[in-house]
Length: 142
Image 1 (cartoon, one colour):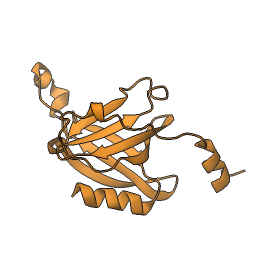
Image 2 (tube, helix red, strand yellow; image 1 turned 135 degrees about the horizontal axis):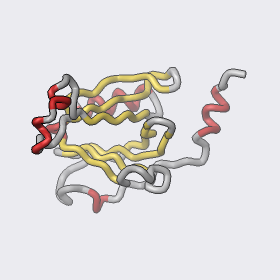
Image 3 (cartoon, helix red, strand yellow; image 1 turned 180 degrees about the vertical axis):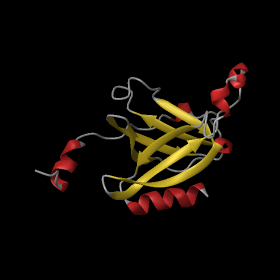
């Protein structure tokens, strides 16, 4: 039996995105947009998360219990955002892939694998509650 819309809704039922902790801001005085509830998509796991866009950073606050393998709050400087790609998630136009360049090249820069196209690029995939929510976030990002 194919997964119906009701079944898909029940998979994430009861899971709420964590409230964003303002102490996680890099600069406590930086202006930020209201938090947006999203789902962080990683292999074999969908994690409720909160996405916050500030003047200089992009923050993703995942539920620490559900994302034991990752930090509770990830953040990237907007200057390192290389690309935002619209994606589908569960056959809906609600996902967004964010690609960031590495902060700096270290002594490992001599590694020939880092010379390959796309090497060192960090990517994260999030899904919004609706197509309109994704487009509004992209508009704010621009």
